[in-house]
Picture 1 (cartoon, rainbow, N blue to C red):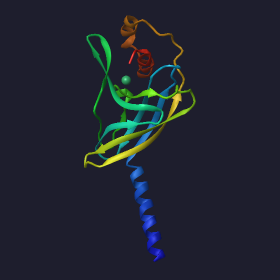
Picture 2: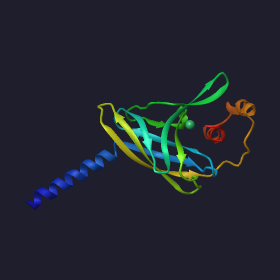
Picture 3: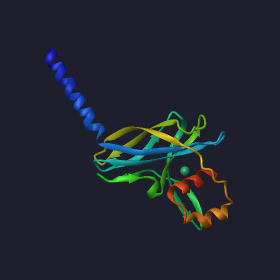
Amino acid sequence: MKKYVWAGLAALLISLSAQAKDVKVSDAWSRATAPGQDAGMLQAVITSKKDAKLVGASSKACASVELHSMVTEGGMMKMRQVEAIDLPAGEAVDLGAQGYHLMLIGLKKPLKEGKKVAVTLQLRQADGKMKKVKVSAKVRGMTDSKPQAKHEHMEQHKEMTQHEHMDMHEKMQH
Ligand SMILES: [Cu+2]
């Protein structure tokens, strides 16, 4: 009888570790927030072995997490909530590079540089299976550059790298 229990346990462990490898998350990071700042953002590179969609996320650090994209409309940069972000099989999807970010809304306390923020991603695979993936994102320091007027921001927008872009983004009203 004991043998079967161990065999069962081993099978369970193997299936758990196989599952864990289905989705790989790397380069997860967030940005320190100022006291009173309601929202933070999070970036990550997600690789799913199977076709999937990122459909949501949650964190104990904040009230809710939304998936956002950034779009330019009539010269104005706006954030839009999106329902899902495609994760084609085997492709390393860099959220930031694709104009996406996770928005941590209703922060319970400011995000401090050097700390980590834990977020659980929710993926829906093409076969309908839901998958939760825990991510620990490193909190990077706030940018040193001063907030700029909006028109200056827009002029410089094109020349900014993605990371600089995100710095600017956090200073905008959400
Ligand atoms: Cu946003």
